[in-house]
Length: 385
Image 1 (cartoon, rainbow, N blue to C red):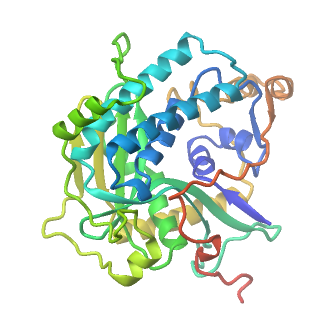
Image 2: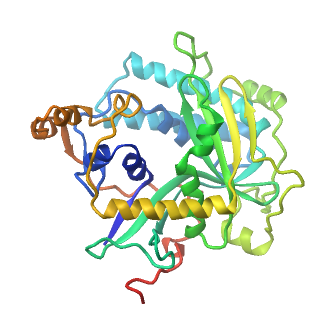
Image 3: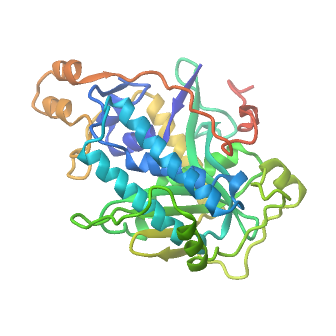
């Protein structure tokens, strides 16, 4: 057996150890018993974008692919509604559906002008062994002898015109655009760069592309758009938004690149003459930021992950970190407040929380993987062997 650490586990550990203690699988493994009351718009948009950037259809006509994207979004919303037991659609769900469709249609008009990359994989998972902080050539193990593994997913792996690989992250933003410094400081994206390089040996990740979509301001109408794009609308889209500099697919069918063949046969990343650490394209609703990560920066993130994981498996005290930023959105605020008041949180936990069910295998997606899990990280030496 292996002890799995996810990006969410690490984020909660760094944010507030009491929150991590309540929710992490290696600790109390709790979650709110009540299902979410509304839709997860970002999850539905992420599923739609995975279809939009499906490598095998990247060079297809938009009159074929865009209706499939819309159908994917609708299917994701329907699945969420069924999961929470909503037979029909109330006003909140209809509003979110309309907002999502409007954002997608406007994204169709914006993205072709800035998509200067080619998708390689979408919704691809990775799982790597966490190294020991003091001995990086050995794997970290728990006091009971379990191997510690770090598991996560990337929204997309893409390659640019210089044959350099990038991890793409889709984000939904409410309110003002976050400062670029916040994107640079995000540990999760740096860790994904390190982990992917361990997962697929020999591949270097140039950086992260933050693909952000901003929700319409409160009180404004999201706009109207046809449920499925019609031929006239698609023809107008092609005239208004010619695609950015194309990236060769290397396959006669126009299908997406396959990583092993691409890397072994003809791809050698070449750095452009002028390199900017940050490149950005921004409109009122969409922002794309290219963040280059240096080799030393990525390597350092692996060392920081090792130190954090070593602390997590050592059984540290679960002290709280109260703040106006951490506490209001926390799912465990009520039992935490009871503990601050010196009360027993047990009744609250028994009434409003449940054990988190085991992880279900993620549904496979075409374009989401090109090899087996056997091509993971380099084998570590355990027990000094």
